Length: 312
Image 1 (cartoon, rainbow, N blue to C red):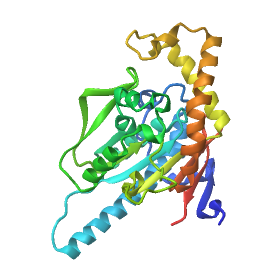
Image 2 (cartoon, rainbow, N blue to C red):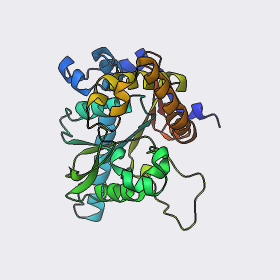
Image 3 (tube, rainbow, N blue to C red):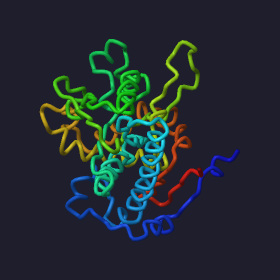
Image 4 (tube, one colour):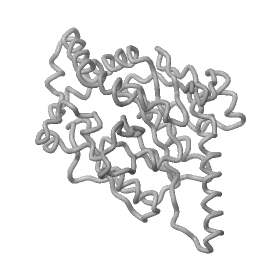
């Protein structure tokens, strides 16, 4: 079956019209705070792309909550509050973190679900000492570098309606898990889970292995997409920006790169892409795209050119 046959495709303008009368609740100051490094998303794109998406998700959340109420009626008692879980996947440097933050801000402004939590799967990477012990530091970001069992247990607890669930926190500055800090999730209306490999299912399953996957807990999933050559360009541009900002911090794990010339930095970024991020995208991330409920397709200018929505 043609994968495209499972999706409805909308160009930028057609998708934008689906926002109908939904008001824009963000301003330029909000956008500056939410935008990632080198991201060029504008208020007009928020209005045309992310506002319709927030409207769709609001409708889906309301329908799912109605299903839970129907189940409560059938069982004759009130179940624990169960949050709606949204997964966001995509490559390094494609803009999935900005997408996650924008949706968190927009969805939290809908009257029916004011509490929206955002969890990144970076927190479920093994600590550097564990990666070093396993010989996986050069594979950081690949599926085997994550404590998937821990992430699954976290999502199980969230979906079971537990009062309080804790998640580890990752620092990009020190490039490691922060051992003395945790993120606490307290029965939100919506949880957004953002990460590279959140839609992945192992190609070969060991009969003795766990059969529950991260994506099993998603009510809705989004894949942020662009051509690999374009994402590589964005990665290099971001690396150059970081070299002049975050990397200048003496405590930054990548401080050594701040002393590179622009030419040297471009070469280094290209080598990192070719040896780590590119292969991970090709082998592990891109193949999960068609599993998403919705795909945001970006052009060379970072702007979403089209949207694909999976047919129900």
